Length: 216
Length: 216
Image (cartoon, rainbow over all chains, first blue to last red; front, top):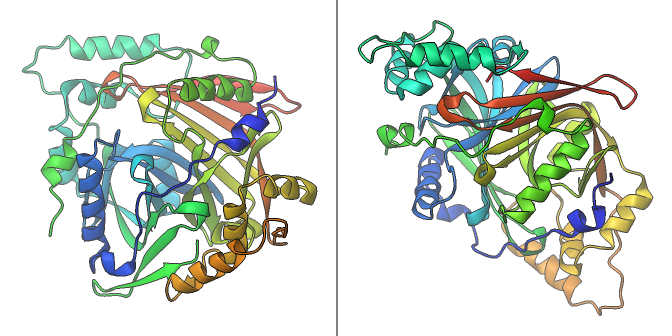
């Protein structure tokens, strides 16, 4: 079976919703992100908090969707199993990037930087705020390990979920948060003829950011 | 201004649309992709052909959205300016990955492999199939270069677009296609409590692929 190349190659949407100039964006890129994120919420973008996280392992990139749990002037926070594939990558190489794409808004945000682990107390605080089912999931799954079928996983989940509500499901030691400390942000607004607007912020040290426009 | 952390951290959607087992997927991952892509088209997913492409430069990952132009058993095709940031990264390091995320279907496809340039004839064929406005865009823009404002770009576009229709806009030498040759595919179906289904294909040589299930 061959992909219908003629068809896929002709899929194209002309972006024409908006125009982006550097002066439209606040001085701090985290504030710019907040403005864009608020609009995404307001316009009911599906899963606006989903971002593609890329890591590097042995010189190869690897990427997957994770959910952002906080994004402010100190960085971009997400949680995972530290023994997952991405956790092992980040142990070896702390450089990472995230990409938000909101097709409805014809917008994309690219953020690059390095990663550090959150303090254990923050990971605990967040873990115990999650629904019980997600807590059980974090305990039951040895993330990224090969398993022969789903049954063993479902059995462990059933055992955990059948415990009385008053039994605390303890956060596994290897589960917790990361913070990406950015040195690069790009705000991308799609434009007609692929002549997009790209406004970049580069870290100039001491909470100072330098804005410029890139050719599309 | 601080991000409203309480709010963002509480954004969560329980995935419950479907279940994925290895036996649901055909032997070749390109065929599996086609099935999923066809469903995405059928259900009017916004820009189903958008994928996040990640490259590596000096041990740091970098990612951006590009549009897939073909995906079949020989690989994943897209086009760009070879002198763009991604082009320069790929000159130094041919490893790359792409990520498709279709939140409406609660699905994600991850593909990893190495990149090679398409033959010039294929790049020409595709270039001349594009709308004239996109051809002009490819000529007018020195992709990823810093520019002081949008005017110079708009002026170049206007000049090109005011040429008579019978004047061919020639494909720039530095514009063309890449093919990602995969050695890894992951098909991800979101499930409740973050206990997702993850089915992986790894290249076993000679068009042979080995399927397995990963722990979520």
